[in-house]
Image (cartoon, rainbow, N blue to C red; front, side):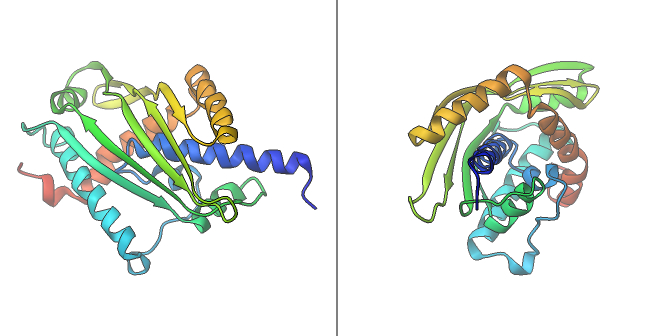
Length: 227
């Protein structure tokens, strides 16, 4: 039988995982949620649904655009990408399963319009030090629920990243307005306020940016090289 304490823990983990999805989709070319959890949650390409394949291709286009600035340092227009990232129920179960609890809902689908000034990205890689403040982004996630229907959650953030000698060294998401069902919204507001204070997700973002610039950009080198 599930105790009140266990139920509260599951709710906190559900919210924490959703917040991770919201925050990390901002740096959408990196599938960071699964990687940060240190579990194998990647879906083989042959098993991807048509929807997931379309999402992946959309993220790839964004990845090439950002790598052309950060690695090729190519001139051009600013970065503007519409990103969608789905997290399957079984992927989320593996993540929260590390805490010996279950994922109570279905999949999460998050969407964001990623915007970045190209000159800022180029300077981030070439200047000795740079404090980069990005535009305010809104990320929207739909969480499938069996009994109550989908829960739609939106959150605003204004990311800041400090770069030194071509590497991210510090990052914060700087959460703003959060909207969602009353119960979830209250807990989300508390969680995002905590992240604004103690910067729980900062190290994740730093690690993901540095991995993106090296490993992930190498994966699409043929597309951005020479631009």
